[in-house]
Image: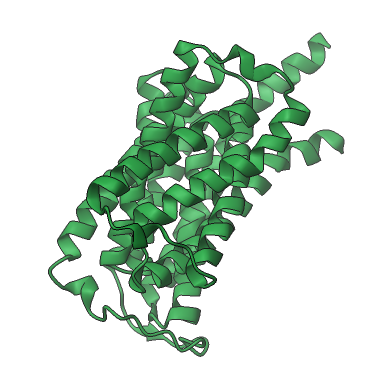
Amino acid sequence: MGRTKKEWWPATFMALIQVFTTGQMLLTKVVVDDGLSVCTLLAYRFFMGAILVIPLAVVFEKGKWKELNLKAFIWIFTSALVGFTIPGLYYIGLGDTSPGYAINFYNIIPIATFILAVLFRKEPLNMRSLVGIIKVIGTVICVGGTLVISLYKGMVIHLWPTNIIGYHTKHSGSAYGQHHMRGTILLIISCLSLAVWYTVQAQMLKVFPHKYWSTVATCFVGCIQMAVVGVAMNREKATWELKWNMSLLTIVYSAILNTAAKFVMISWVVTQRGPTYPSMFCAVSVLFTTVLDSLLLGHDLSVGSILGMIMILAGLYFFLWGKRKESAPQSKEQHQLG
C-alpha cells in the first residue's frame, strides 16, 4: 500500500502544478491587459520565489550551498535563461492573444521534450516493444487533442453561464489585430524554450543535486536576467512601482505557487520520473484553462474543445501507463535484490 501511494505522488504534484498554472494564466491576462509590464511581474515573482524557498534550503540542505561551483553556476544560469527568462515571452504573447488561444501552444512542449530526451538519451525509447509504442501513441494523442482544441471549433455549447465575473478587456479584439502574429511567434519560442528546460533541469540536478538551493539560485539569476531585460525595454521608475491591487496579488500568487512550489515540485519529479514526465502534464492545463477561460472570461466552449479534452486525457493515460510498465521491471528487480 505504501509503495502504491508513493507512486502517485509525482502525478499528484504535476496535477497541482497545472492548477497553479491555470490560475496564474488567467490572472496574468487580466493584469497585463490592465497595463502591468511582463518584465516587472516576472522579476518580482522570481525574487519573491527565491526568498520563500531560502528557509527550506537552510533547514533541509544546511551548508549545501558551499558545493555551488562554476560548473554548477553555468548550469543554473542556463536553467534560468531557458526556464525563466525566455519563457517570459509567453506572457507577452498571452497579452497579444487570449488564455484560450495561448494555452494550446503547450502542446509543443511534450513532443519537443520527448524528442530532445530521446536524442540526448535521457528517455529510453524502444519502438520494438509495446511500452515504447504506447508512449509514442500517448504523446501523439495529447498533441492531437490540443490541436483539435486550437483548430476545430464546431458548434458552440452553453453548459454554464459565461463571463460570470463581468470581465472586459481594455484591448478588445487584439487577439485578431496587428499583434496577433507577434504573439503567436512569441508563444512558440517560449514553449520550445521550456521543452529544452526540462532536459537542462535534469542535467543541472546531476551537477548540483540540491533542489532547494538550486531553486533559490535559479530564481535569483532569473530575477536579475529579467530585471536587465525590463530596464533595457523601459527605464521609467513608475514601471517598477507596486500598489495594493490585482497586480500585487498576481505577483504574490505566482511567486508562491508558480515559482517556489512549482520549481521544487518539478525538481523532485524530474529526479523520480525523468525530464519527459513533467512535460506530459502540460496538456492538463489546456483542459483546466479551456473550462475556466469560458466560465470566468467569457470565451466560448465548443464541440472541438470537448473533443480535444477527451483526447488529452486519453493520451495522458496511455503515456503514464507506458511509464508505469517501463519502471515496473526495475522496481521488481530492486525489490528482489533487496
